[in-house]
Length: 55
Image (cartoon, rainbow, N blue to C red; front, top):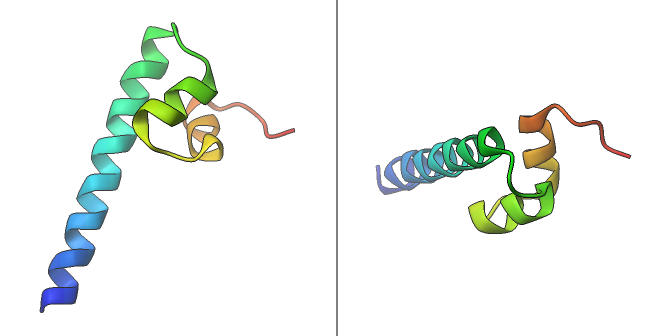
C-alpha cells in the first residue's frame, strides 16, 4: 500500500511539473533549456510539450 501511495505522489508531482512547464511555454519568454531547468524536467520532455523536433 505504501508503494502505491508513493507512485501516486510521484505521478501527481510530474503532472504539476508538466503544468508549470506548459504555462512557461505559453508565455514564450524563456528558452526550452530554461523552462526545463525551472520546471525540473528533462529538455526532451519540454521539447515534446512545445512540439519541437529533437535534433
